[in-house]
Image (cartoon, rainbow, N blue to C red; front, side, top):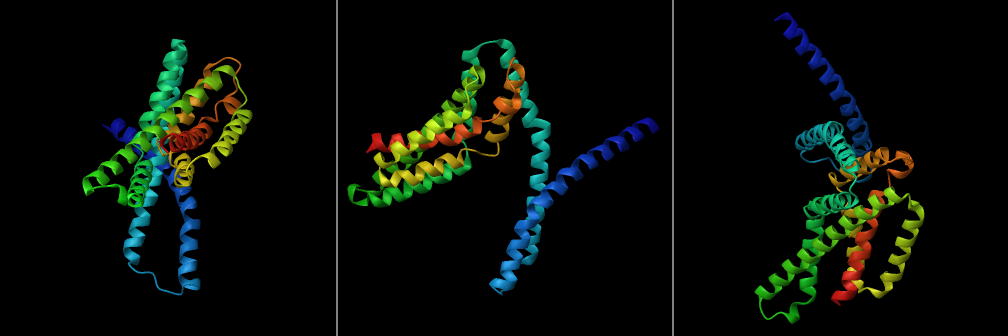
Length: 261
C-alpha cells in the first residue's frame, strides 16, 4: 500500500513539474498581448474595460488550453508523426510514403476551420457580386456552396501535393531555397494573369493551411523521415515542408481563378 502511494506521489510530482514548465511558457507568451491591450485601453483609449471578470476567466481558459495543447504535442502528435515516418521508411515503398503525405495534407486541410471560414466568406461575397445573374435565391445558394467546396478542395489538394513534393525533396536531397524561389517566381507570373477578385483569396489561402494539427504532424514527418534516411541531416533536410504547404495553395488558387474565369 505504501509503495502504491509513493508511486502515485512520484507520478503526481513528475506530472506537476511537466505541467508547470509549459504553463510558464504559455504565460510568458501571453503576457505581452495582455500588457499591450491593457496599456492601450487605459492610456490611449482611456476607457475602462467592460466585463473584466469574463475577460480574466477567458484568459485563464486560453492559458490552460495552450498549456495542454503544448503537452499534447510533445506526448502525442510529435511522436506519432516521427513513428509514422520511421515505419514508412522501413517499409521502403516510395509510393506509399507519397500517398501518406498526400492523404495527411489533404485530410487535415480540408477540415481546417480557418479554411472553411475563408471559403464561406469568399463564396458569400462572390455571390453578392453576381446577384444579377441568379434567377432566384436557390441558384445563389447553390453557387455559394459550390464555390466554397471547390475552393476548399483545391487548397486541400494543393497541400497534399506540397507534402508529396516536400517528402520527395527529402528523399532526393534537393535544396529547398531554390525550389522556394522558383515557386514564388511562378506566383509572381500568375498573379497578373488571375482575376483581381481571386488574388487576395489565393494569398490568404496559403496562410490558413498551416493549422495547429498540420504543422506539428508535418514537422514531425519531415524530421523523422530525415532521421531515417542515410546521408540526410534532420536540421537541414527535415524542415521546409510547411513552406511548400504555404506556397502551393497560392499557385493552385491562382490557377483556379484563371481556369474558372
